[in-house]
Image (cartoon, rainbow over all chains, first blue to last red; front, side, top):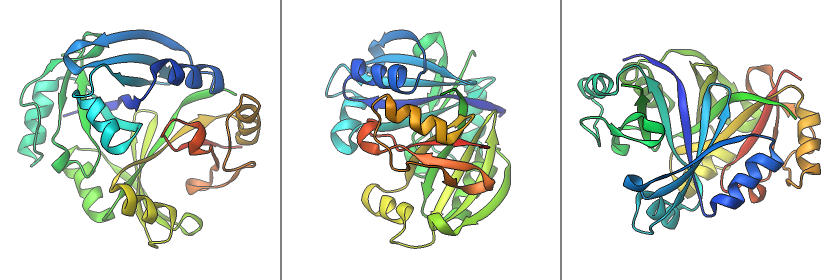
Length: 134
Length: 134
């Protein structure tokens, strides 16, 4: 697999409007997109910082993954996504390197990109995603 | 302030050797430096991923900040560092934008860089650092 950069950092927030205001008005970053991802039960806001995006995640359902995360741990960094050329191939290669997977095959994430999650039991406390065009 | 990119993501780990092996052998990333930062009571290992570094942090003292973090929350993302031109000026500007600070002035961090932390009460659950040459 070829990890080229950190595609995004997913940050769980309690209130998307409050979080957008913090990153925009207090840190001076620019929000370029807001999108609801029904499959993940989140509303997201995107900021570009160098070649990495900050993806703010507000849960739209307490039973969704981000809702459960916030209930257990509070707001904070939810996951890191590494940019890869090909998500399926990278998942297979990680598995052959001994990494457990959540997603055996890619699925669609925000911004129309392909995504796949590694299993947190394998990633030392950091929920980790592969993300790419293919 | 001018945040150009994410300088690094600090990840608290229980065992630095185990974590280096995961990022190197299972994800294929390259560890380019290992450094002890006595002031922070951590031993660190650095990986470059695009224009961002992953900084693995193993505590050298249970009473240090990373030791306390792991005891409370377990291993995982500890902080995000934004690259800025001038740390002191960026801290002042953040404060004037209403952000509480841990560090009113820059201090020395890993790799000889200047660093300063924002107060977690202001940053919505993400421990946040400014980091730069100056």
